[in-house]
Length: 77
Image 1: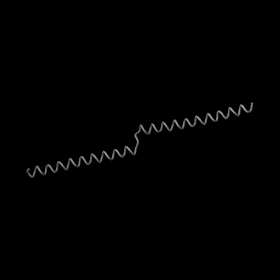
Image 2 (image 1 turned 30 degrees about the vertical axis):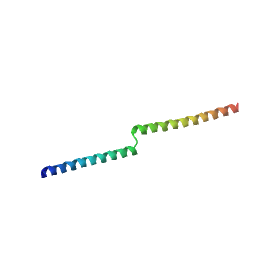
Image 3 (image 1 turned 45 degrees about the vertical axis):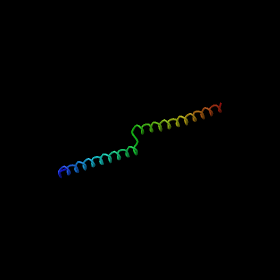
């Protein structure tokens, strides 16, 4: 093997190694950011669940108030 071919092999191997390292680093960074930041769909689903739960609580409170008013009206008659 000639000296030029040997040096070209070292350069090619170095470039490929750097590219693979850079790609692996980018992949790990993206994976970590996805784990820390839930997707938009997940956040919307969670928001919808909270909204439904809050609405259900308000509905229950209004029903209790309505029942209390009806009971007081019935007591006065």
